[in-house]
Length: 308
Image (cartoon, one colour):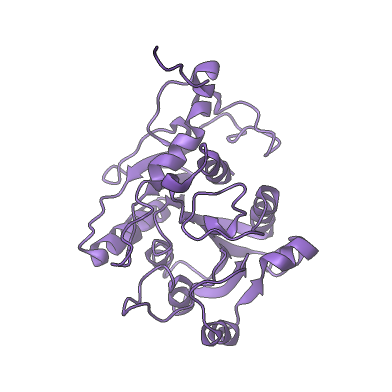
């Protein structure tokens, strides 16, 4: 007997198979386009040799997480209180995935930097789908010479290691590298909890630099109000969303799950609160491992955050 097909929301809504995020127009970096936002993906930037590019399939999975709604892109989105594109014009594009070279991390970083810079040069907001948490480092570098920025990070871990096994550009050093960039004037880290790579010395270094930490327990007790208050009016904000900052009940597909992460609505309200204080200048969504996901739940959650 043939196996029965699973119910398919795409079939219900009439969405054809799409390869871009939510069926957005496809774009190429060698053909400049005018769009409010540009999406691109990459398997990793600087993977640790002992684990490799374990998030390499994340960009495809995140796109698939929302593909079933591609035919409804101009319908009402009740999370937003309006369609994603309220004026009826689809004003974002998807550049697809950048090439990845497992043997040349410097080249991977150059590709991420250049991709983000190309979108910025055209007046758009770059959104990168990772990839592990090494991807945001070159992503942040693309903003050099364009003003001062606040980094708002969602993450269960603080990423302040100087190096891990000799690698200084890896996923445990993301925020330390960001702190060394002259255009980064403020770092707000949200969601830390449990055990990770950080040692007491790394926490002390971050606090000495001036990082404002809001642990997951703090958010559970006090809400997101104090975090939004910590973002000065008029700030240019870059969101760095390591999805293990979210609770594993909504994003189970991560390599280091820990209970007590941000809820979907806390993540959404903080994103909107940050945008309301200034301008959302870019976003990175990293550390999703589709092979560890459950029934596509994490892919759906992450794709919904991207849609915001």
